[in-house]
Length: 179
Image: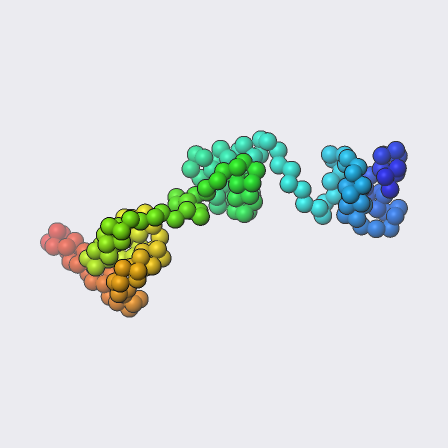
């Protein structure tokens, strides 16, 4: 196979057809033998991680100007995981932003007074989402911190009642302004 590829300059597909095996088998055997494959003859079924410098730079540039991973993927016709791979493994970006601007894999540590602040805001009637937005953490983190602080967390039913009550008050104020 090696002499046919190197000396005779046959293509991988021609060698595969002659040998009666798959193209990927020829590719694998030549690679394992240490043969430098010609650039243009990468077989279709084999994934390569070759991304041009221009494509990588474009991915990084779009991400750095504020596009989310999903938006970069849509613009470049890539999956979000491909964009994430390019940014972390190929460009070396350590912390990625999520769709709402928060960092992936980064958990903001709250000091103890923030635990009490979260509890105070929650007891004033704010939802876990609203408390999380004010403190810069997720609503799941708010719920966990409330449980650690010993604050009873509202059920879904109670949360919905509270939200409807807030909306009714807001609508009543709007009606007073109009009349």
